[in-house]
Length: 97
Image 1: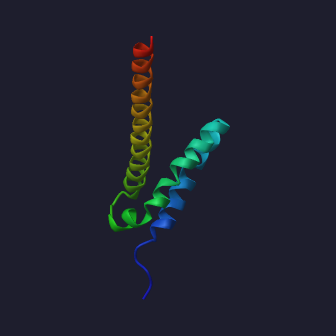
Image 2: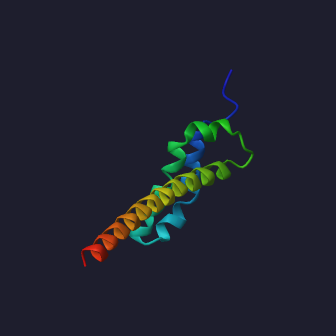
Image 3: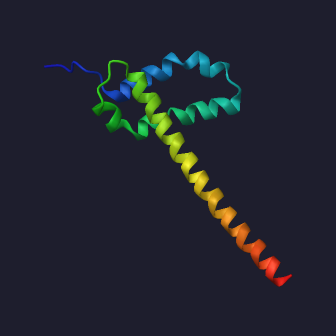
C-alpha cells in the first residue's frame, strides 16, 4: 500500500518552491532572512506533521511565529538583564559620588 499523505518535509519543499519568485525579488539580505524563516518548520517538523491541517502553510507559518517569539523573548530577557546591570552601576555611581 502506498502513502496517501505527503510527508511534511515534502510539503515544506513545495511551499518553498511556490515562494521561489518572491524570494528572488528580495534583496540579498532579505533572502537570507526569508531562508531563515523557512528553517523554522524544519525545526518543528514533528509538530507540523502531527497537526494535520487542510492548509499546511498555516503549520509552516505557526512554526515561524513560534521561532520568532522565542527570539523576542530571548532579546527581552537580555535587555532586562542589561537594564538591571545599568541600574546597579548607576546606584553605585550615586553612592560613590
